[in-house]
Length: 150
Image 1 (cartoon, helix red, strand yellow):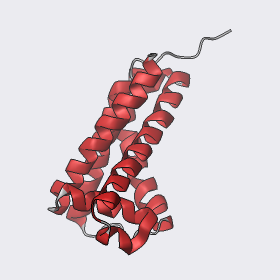
Image 2 (spheres, one colour):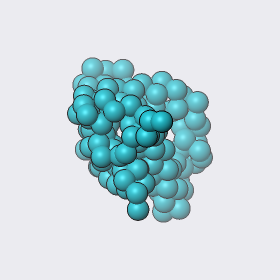
Image 3 (cartoon, one colour):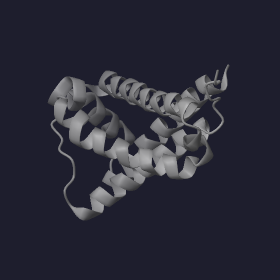
């Protein structure tokens, strides 16, 4: 597998899986409840009554979004060498972007009955989780090949 594909798969699956655990810890919930919350983006409140199928849907959605997020960064890193050269800084900045897009665009446009946290502690904890997400994605993308110049 080429370095870009490896970066997308490893970064997406690892960051996405760790994000589920982080959300469970931050919210003091079982990871299955986090997966139901993710599925609620498609199913609405019914996801919380959907049992294992809804949880599996939530996992699939989490991994699909995580792979897409990793693919966007990896694609950008093939074109912008500074994203690879300064991957920790780029990953942190990407984490902030992920936080903003997910909490203020994706979730509000979904069927999820959840709102972005407003209290300082949950905001900071969720932002820290997204900083970690961005760092993981950038770490795996640091070795992608740049586009050859002609």
